[in-house]
Image (cartoon, one colour):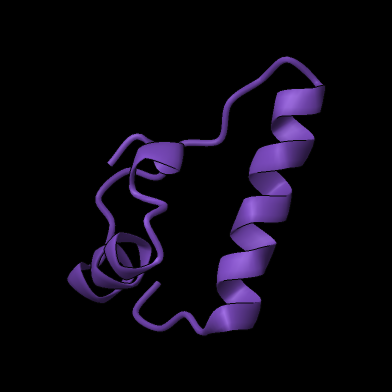
Amino acid sequence: MTFVDSSGTRALVACHEHAARLGAALEISQAHPYLRQVLAITDLLGMFHL
């Protein structure tokens, strides 16, 4: 993933919440620097274990 906007960020959060309801975890590995920057700006790095 080399691009994500607010819709993509919201989709990732929704997937994370759905996984949590099922007792699972959604993790992102080897995140592109752009995605990592967006998640850092939105304070979501910890949510995805980055």
